[in-house]
Image (cartoon, rainbow over all chains, first blue to last red; front, side, top):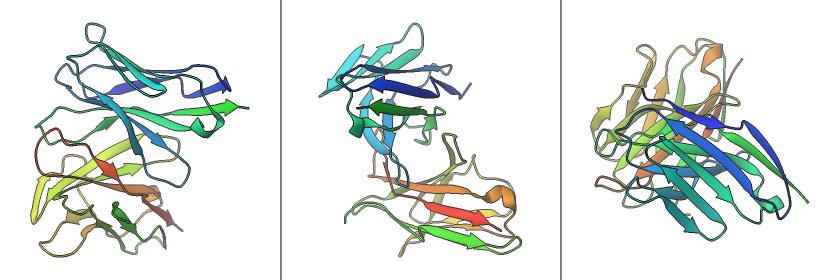
Amino acid sequence: QQQVKQSPQSLIVQKGGISIINCAYENTAFDYFPWYQQFPGKGPALLIAIRPDVSEKKEGRFTISFNKSAKQFSLHIMDSQPGDSATYFCAARVSGAGNMLTFGGGTRLMVKP
Amino acid sequence: NAGVMQNPRHLVRRRGQEARLRCSPMKGHSHVYWYRQLPEEGLKFMVYLQKENIIDESGMPKERFSAEFPKEGPSILRIQQVVRGDSAAYFCASSPRGINQPQHFGDGTRLSIL
């Protein structure tokens, strides 16, 4: 019930291409969906987040698409750059119910120059 | 640096010893969360604390693990009688008071058990 499933586990994209990472959840009480970026040896850094009352949110080259009926959301990285190479985690939270985040398993992105 | 501070960054312990991990939240943040990350896996929630209170410890193992966030000083995650399976990266996050606040993470403590 609390799981968040993330795919793919790893992704290789050419510089300038589009990176797409997908997540699916089961708990319909989730109402906050952040994406985190993690570099080796560092903690996760909040990248962008969305609430289920909108279907898309864009910040620079990063876009979240949200499909409430399918219980899926995805991260799109446009014009991918080698500096985007990192591990990306989707997460979900039930606001007010402890505030803990439930994380997906992560996607290791490599952007080739 | 006004971010979440964790120390030590690396900790090596022998089986049976105790491990103490410290976390100082961002300035103005009164909520602290601890997560554990095993190699090649996502982060798993352990415990949520406010000053002098444990709000949710549903992710904490029932034995050997404890956490506190005293009125003064950092939050402490304590692991007694460590075993090899405790080897992981332990991350602390903090957020301001109020619902729907984003969590900001520290750079973690890498715990290795010999």
